[in-house]
Image (cartoon, rainbow, N blue to C red; front, side, top):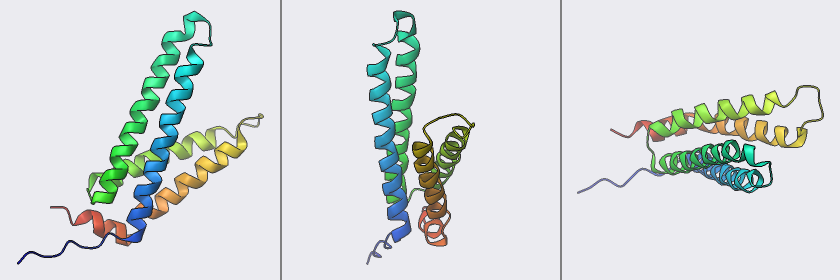
Length: 132
């Protein structure tokens, strides 16, 4: 007889969903950068498209990490932690005293902190550790 698959913890579901939402956000950033690069002077076209490709790659990476979190793949935890640290750095970097996009920075910081709290929970660690 085969054993039933263990139930996915709710925290792992939320962490995977958060990574998928962040993936959609990065795909949106990629589309925006691609469109905006055509409005810039022609000498900025290559750089703008390069940034759009980097953002799209990040979005695809996050989509894979979100799916891996939902499937219980052990590598999803480190991918989520690295992304959340980078995102928190971007959010904190916008508080330079100028008139930057403070509401967006607060949203990024809140998502990063929520993501870290979720992936560091004991139930998620157990869910990801079960992979042999």
